[in-house]
Image 1: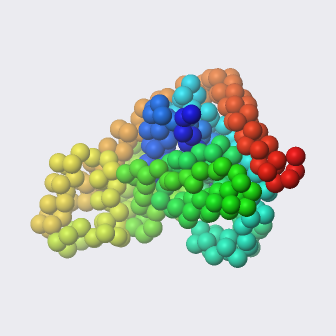
Image 2 (image 1 turned 120 degrees about the vertical axis):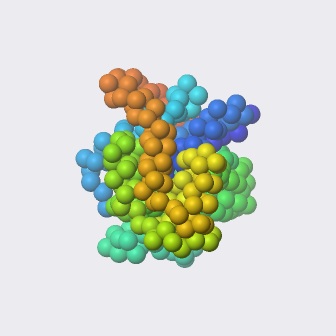
Image 3 (image 1 turned 180 degrees about the horizontal axis):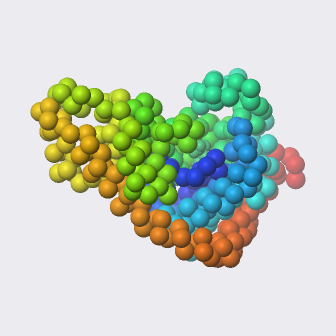
Length: 328
Ligand code: TRP
């Protein structure tokens, strides 16, 4: 039997470069590997764990499928679907929640971060976030998960739930691993932390045109250019070099590294080269996206098929687990 892959992106806004490099590139690579059966969803239920706008969500849970298609995910090769349209995720998440303690969930760094960001919204759903994620993955018995580095603590919880379920109830869940990509960590344009939808000014959207990319990069902090020595690992300059490395050929990258070392770097040139390189990568995406925007029926049919296929696979797992847990 083929190994399964599952991944998802929350429907919290339009996709940005961090999603593309951290998750979608890995999703594409696995889709084209015939050893795997690939399932990719929009994690619309996870969107409900932080404050959101209802109409925005209604739109985004569809727009992200269009982004997937435009990025090259292919409904002929992958199952593309919406998490909330498949009721088995929630059902399995409830069953899984019986083997995880509250204390364990409260200690996760990802939970603590969200508590800091939204102290007024520390809900049961937020606490349960990783358990639902475990259900997303294990309902397909997926063992390879293309997601960014920030998701590692969640994947660890998924493995723990798989082990517990197998021990306590004799199920056969795999212990999934994160599938890593070179762009697993994409830094923020603001010089600190990662590129994130929730931090204004930190990201480049996949639908940004060249002028927008340039103006966003223009605001990225740099230094006097007279520092010399090794490229800093963090901060504005470090982040720009990390991005540059992800987008340009090695010779061009090395040229800027040498310029930096020899105190003759011109950040405006570097940003120009970087903007052009990023836009070149996004252009085919934007053109493909136009096609799907103009053909909504095609998109609707793809979503409908995907939701159905995903539910069929998930139903089998939930039935099996219910049997093992004494519910059937
Ligand atoms: N937590 C993931 C994120 O923020 C989204 C997600 C939800 C996910 N369920 C998943 C990713 C299952 C991989 C597999 O990006």
